[in-house]
Image: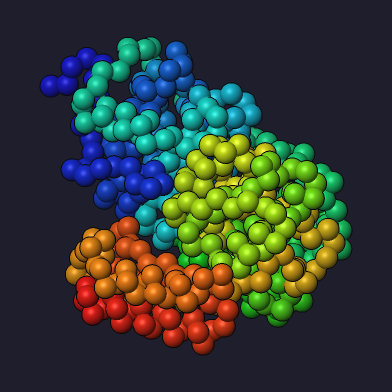
Length: 450
C-alpha cells in the first residue's frame, strides 16, 4: 500500500527521462498509467499552491489519450489542467511565460514515427525542467517522496491557444513584409499544420503547404525536416522563392532555396547572427552552437568579430549556455534555432521568419553569411563504444589529422550516446581531402576497436 499523499510507482525499471523528456512507444513504454503518474508528480513538485498547467500536443493518434491522462494526474495532485490542443512546442513555452502558468507539458515525440510519443515539461520561465527537477519527478514516481495534500483540481479547455501563439509571432514580426513572396511550407503533418501557413499569410506571403493533412499516423512520414529533400524538389519544380520544412512538434526548421539547395541550421544561424548583430540585438556579442556545427560557421563569425561558444549536442545544452552567458542566439545544424528574445526554446516558425527578416528582401539563393566546408560523417559500428576513451592509437590519429587541418578544418570523433557506434566527422577545405582524412580515421577506429 502507498502512504497517503505518496505517488505509487508507475515507471518501467529504467530511468524515465532522456535527453528530451520521456519518450517511447505509446501504449507500451509510454502508457496512460505512466502519463497519469507523470502529471501527478510534475504538479506535486510545483511550488505553486494551485499549479496552473498548460498541456498541448502534436497530431499523433495517441496524443489525446496521453493528454487526458496527464490532465487527470495534474488534477489529482491539486492543479488545474488547461488543454491547449494541437500547438507547436515553442508555443507552449511562450504562452507559459506570457500568461504566468506554473507548468507546461508537451505531448510529442518530435521527429519520431507516429508510434512513438513523448512528454516534456516546461517551468514557469518557459524553459524545460532541468536535471534536478526531473530527478524530483522521478523520485515521486518511485514512491520516494510525499506530495502535499491539495484539493482535487479542475480540467478545462484553453480556447484560442493557437491564435494566441500566432498573435505573438505577428507582434514580433509585424514589420516583415512578405507581399509577393511565394513560399512553400512542409508542416510534416504535425503541430505546425495550421499556425505556420496562417502567420505567413498574415504577413502577406503567397503560401502553399505540403504535409498539412494529419491523420494521426502520417506525422513525419516521408516529409518534414527529416525528409527535406521532398521540400527542396517541390520548391525548385514549383518556382517558389523559398521553402521551409518543420518537424513534428515545430521546434526545428530547415530551408530550401529556389534552386532546390538545402539550407541547414548552420547557414540559417549565420544569417540570423549577422542580422541581429547589425540591429544591436546580439548580446555579447556571441552565439552558442554544438560540436556538430560546420567549421565554416566558426570562420564566418570570427571574420566579423562574433564570439562562438561550443556545447555538446542537444538544444538544452545550447539554451543552458545562452542563459549562462546572457546571450540570445544559438542552435544546431539540425535546425533547432533559439532566439531567447522571443522564446527560450527552439521555434521553427519564428526561425523561418527570422531568416526572411535577415534577408531583407534578398533571395535566399543569394545568401552569403558563411561558406560551408565539405563535411564527411561516418558511423563506425564497434562492440563497445565506451572503449573509445582508452583507444590510444585512435587519439594519436585524431591528433595527427587535427594538426594537419589546423586553421583549415577540423576532426571530431565521439561515441554515440545511444548506439554501439563511434561517430567520425571531418571537415576540410575540399571534398577529396575530407574523404581521405575520414577514411584514415575510420581505419584507425576499426583497427583498434572493431
